[in-house]
Length: 114
Length: 112
Image (cartoon, rainbow over all chains, first blue to last red; front, side, top):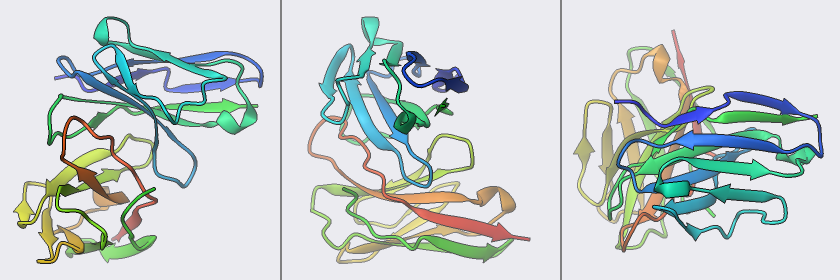
């Protein structure tokens, strides 16, 4: 069974440019998460989806970040325009909907803004 | 904010047991203890979770104290591939998929 797939694996862009990350969760997983991980820190939640609905986006910087999950499957996270401080690893995770479940993470996209 | 406290780093000799402690003194009755690990350049990987009883699976054992204020993750025979950052997380089980809140974790180095 395929795990959570993210692309691209690495991305280098100049500041003020837009960038998008894509995530394909495990088949059948209703819940999808986007996390950001800065160097030396643990991952921090940006947004959580239940099917196609964003149920927790309080940590998403909405002035420049946006996300969507069309048809409740794949998801895209976008930054426009990117800033130097956005350099980080962006992780996608998915899980079944339920009380006690484990989340499965993708390998992440390492973004470098120069 | 993370509700757990872990040592920033630990070393373990290859083949020996690695015992990773975690303090969660403010844990509530409806919160589980989860452990994840993150190998370099990979996403976090689920290891084990428990509520109040000790748990064991093919990867590790989880020992939770009777008062639930602390726990220990045990890797019985550590290998070089176990070198990773280990995260201890408390997570509510009230309803739905509450997100995982990560701290800085413990960086375990397994030494040959």
